[in-house]
Image 1 (tube, helix red, strand yellow):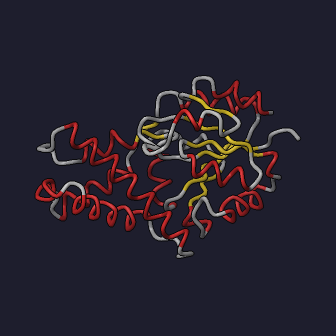
Image 2: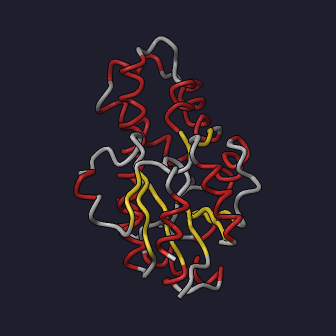
Length: 236
């Protein structure tokens, strides 16, 4: 069955969230410590989402979960940095996630897909407002047919219904769709729903995964998107 569509995770996979967050952190924090805080904060956000999925809880607004994750990480892992984060600093840090730039290899990969005739969709946890903001700041507004957020779908990935609902909405069979992500948990959910999978390694994400093991787990493993068009062609 020929391919019809490609679903992209957004943050991490297509967007360099890390740079935006570090730019928004208080300047008094040393760069290395700021980077460690950002990476741990992002992982804590994933941990909170995972807990909501396992508890069968409803979707929560991205900014609310993210703010809670920052409070947890500052209190538990970086207590010495708490004095740098008053209410305004915490607000600015959360808002930084709404202003991100694309990784340099993303736009050429998306344009190659457009030439090939494949439909391109964002399919990611988060809010619709978040996706609208970052597709604009990243200059990718014309690259996607639709933005599917967990808020819009009413369910988090990797719950199977998150993939099934998108398949119904775009009128596609699982075998016609490829999911692309820098998150193994997302691709495991997509694979369970019958989709093809492409893992894109980004140093900012999956900081607790064994990368060598992941190289054998999915249909394709890439160290970036430079060879992405050829990989998609191979899957088709």
